Length: 347
Image 1 (cartoon, rainbow, N blue to C red):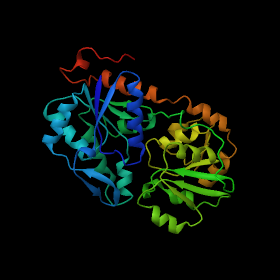
Image 2 (tube, rainbow, N blue to C red):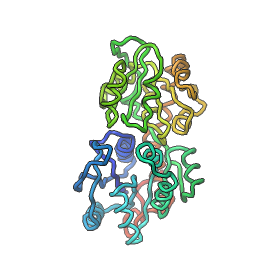
Image 3 (spheres, rainbow, N blue to C red):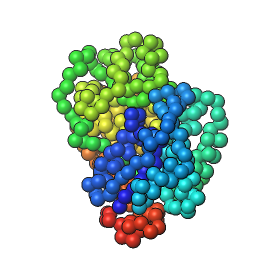
Image 4 (cartoon, rainbow, N blue to C red):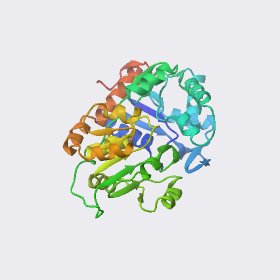
């Protein structure tokens, strides 16, 4: 089975969408399913207003059609609602081809953090975008319920995973006064990092990541340590060396960094909002509190081994199986393809 994924988020961007799609493809390969990607790398791009590190593609219909035909997919999945996602949706609609979509980003909250646009208008546009999808994949039960309540059809659950081969406890010393409170992610206004940086905490606050708000936050909070983007073993070392993972965002639909931290033996401190609440639930691996400072201190007393054992239950192979099963169950295999006659994947 060959699945074509259309995405406006791709390398060199560093975010949860890109990490999810690349890890999904790696895990699916072990199940005999091949992923190909239709990304901004195939088109001219321009810098996104207010976020110049993100480049948006300028796809043309003929180019989209050619790339899809060359990929010979058994199924098409649209991962983002940007220019590529819109153009691939248009292509499928015109040719009456089935497709699936996924909901990764709370755009109403992200846009409202930058410009005064009514959230109802954005939700209406998102409903229209996803309406023809055979299955709208959501990362958590709470998000799936919210989308259904907001009028989205065909919503299914697609959980995420973590690479425990990379993220695991290890003996690392950052040579910083303890405790070390760590936050990892895009340094942007919607991540609510000021709520963390304003806290009166002992030890050190460490921020890993880059983004449009980094320069202003570094200037405003000179006592915090900003390490920029980190990847692979370098990132895993930092997770393992910290004492508490602080997740101040109130807009994330999931937060892969939560599972990465837990797999590294790092307890979580966060607000009791949908992303962290869905990932952690009632498990004794994090402290969720409307007072983030209280959550940070409570997390210091959590067992690191409990965190590791919790994360071990979330694998990318299981995530890939659910993703593929959702496509097959929704009947989103293209007519005339080999997958339509005899899918080579069996759950």
